[in-house]
Amino acid sequence: QVQLVESGGGLVQAGGSLRLSCVGSGSIYSINTKGWYRQAPGKQREFVAALTSSGEPRYGDSMKGRVTISRDIRKNTVYLQMNSLKPEDTAVYYCADYFQGQPRWWGQGTQVTVSS
Image (cartoon, rainbow, N blue to C red; front, side, top):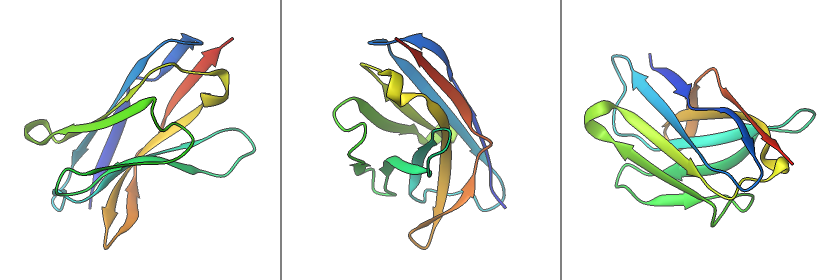
């Protein structure tokens, strides 16, 4: 089993920045692909970014150019640096741990609210 705990969300003005963190633990937590997703009220969960086991980043279209995903293997932590935030970025952000190419385990989410 894998446990994921996100933090770093909050209220920020448009144009501001936030860095989200996701700490992973569990007997089978390993260097699989890690991802960040978000879900706004009334919308489906959407892909934001992922980092493969080899350290290669992947970005979704919604925040491409404004986010950077990174990891600290020693700390079992994955980060999402978000810049130039917009009100439409308001959502609950979730981290995910992949298994066989698909997100398998999810954190509880962290709320990001961007005011105009």
